[in-house]
Amino acid sequence: LVDVVESGGGSVQAGGSLRLSCTISGYTYRPYSMAWFRQAPEKEREGVAVIDSNGLTGYADLVKGRFTVSKDNAKNTLYLQMNNLKSEDTAMYFCALRGGPCVVTLIRSFYPDWGQGTQVTVSS
Image 1 (tube, rainbow, N blue to C red):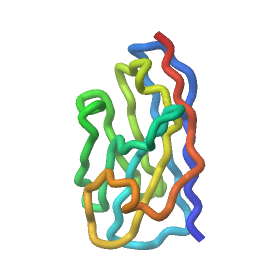
Image 2 (cartoon, rainbow, N blue to C red):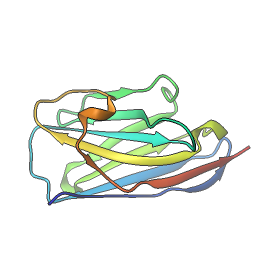
Image 3 (tube, rainbow, N blue to C red):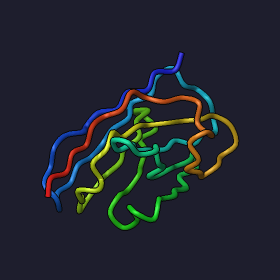
């Protein structure tokens, strides 16, 4: 049984930084893709960043240059470093993963396993 747990969310002022973590347990598939999504109130869930087991990354245009996705294989943990945060980054952030051939994609339906999310609030 796969368990996905996000942490690190909180409240920050515009221009500030946060680092989100996603700890994964019970997952032994190789290769894989892991991604961050976010959902603001009354909006669709959208992809933010993705990394595959080879370390290849991809980002949504809205966060390029500000967010960095990384992973620590020894800790089974995915990270999202968010810098220069803006009020429009306010959302619930979710971690998602899928085993199988490496695909760097931010298509929501590609990912079967999800965490419960962590809230990020950016005040201007």
